View 1 (cartoon, rainbow, N blue to C red):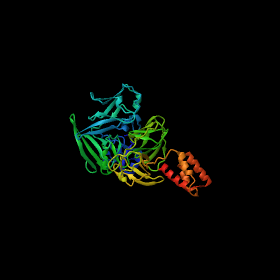
View 2 (cartoon, rainbow, N blue to C red; view 1 turned 120 degrees about the vertical axis):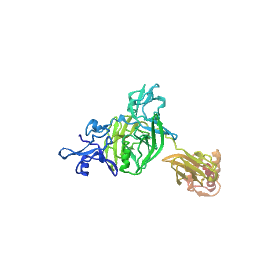
View 3 (tube, helix red, strand yellow; view 1 turned 90 degrees about the vertical axis):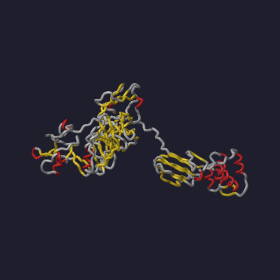
Length: 516
């Protein structure tokens, strides 16, 4: 039988790829049966045999006794390369709980260019091979700027068809014709988001997942923790929803998740954009450059793009990380992290990033609970105290005229007491690098007579002893910009180097009134 090339074995770090030569070194003599469970086909998840060939060459092969013959290497021949059409990615399906006794499903449509579609556009979602069960959605129901989740009912179907009425073929770059649905033998979902795990997805230890399975499932033991959430009758079948997690990275736990086409690992596959600046949405990265640097983490064989683009790998310091440079030639581009199947994907959208972000919400109140607005105030709060709270972690900064007086961390959703507030203080609240709230406490400024001539007359009256011009007059001069006549007189005094002592005392009084 023809040799297999996509084979892995269990190690203390999870499932790892292995060649027939490497396996022969570990097992130097004789046949290793598929019944041993030592070697697994990466394409179909079935155990395979290591056997002898001609001229002492050993190779992997599938067992003739396998019930499931659905393997790419059976279909396309031995050593077949793993090719993916990036358009055939799985759209996200998520499970949502409805009370304590029911659930339903939602299909996520990633952002697509729908602005040019006619008002008569209609999207029809229906189960494959099932009649009289469909959902229709018009253009107004779809979101242009983010992912759109659409209710597809509470019946678990194995696949769904997407049909367009008054649409165009460009949408097929984003929304495929067929979407894989719910496997009756068991489907895993992230508990936190409800999103269904894709085929060959990574599963992490100690992390909880939902498992939806048709009745008749045999409960495991050992390193797998399972709890029943609810059960529901649909037609003549019972479906059960469990929470499930792996207590340890053991072969027993790995085999449990393998039956649902998922791999238990310590290093889940991830996409990390590095440069340029971007904004991130669900399955979308918005940027405004011709090149994107992307870090790939975990057991990923390759990355692919659609439309195809140059992806030269760059050097990395760790085998678990690979750095790629992606040339972005189109406004919308799909990038996928691939192992045997597409593990993760996201769209790169080239567009202007000048949108204004939403300012994080903060609350500042006095001792009576009254909300204090940002800006300027000439009134100190009661008790010279304020309470500060924020939805996010942040930083409280108190400044004087020329220096920072105090810095304190703000914990999300916790009240922080600020006391000893006085005039001449500026209070700032930072979330990240952004100033989201600021208040200046300033004394009420006493009005000075608008008659500059009268003020100048008081200053030029020759009374008292003559003194050298004090150094402080230079600072006073800087605050007299709105009084040109007094400004000129001060310049003349400074040039001469002398002034009357009485004039200097009056000048100080006027300056204090003007500048508070």
